[in-house]
Image 1 (cartoon, rainbow, N blue to C red):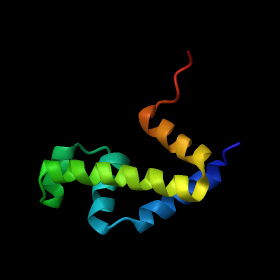
Image 2 (image 1 turned 45 degrees about the horizontal axis):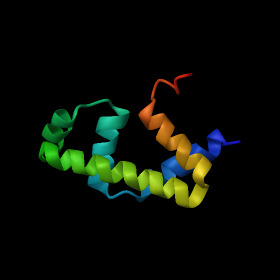
Image 3 (image 1 turned 60 degrees about the vertical axis):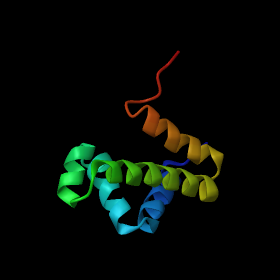
Image 4 (image 1 turned 135 degrees about the vertical axis):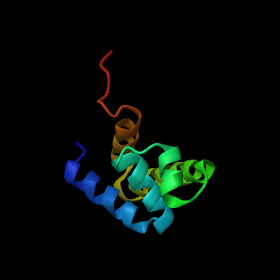
Length: 90
């Protein structure tokens, strides 16, 4: 069974390992709910740069969690990001 505490610990460790600009983009878009355009304006970078930072940031977090927490925690990360409201039942 996947430990929520373990997932949270690894998630925050991954955030702490990100370059500052990538972390700023991630926080604005994922944690504050800003659009790519809003984040770009706030940070003074292009929308494409924001998108690239998000793609690289999400990949980094997934890889970090997989490396240090295994496939169960990596799958938890993937599911939380593809189904933020919860995994649908079929």
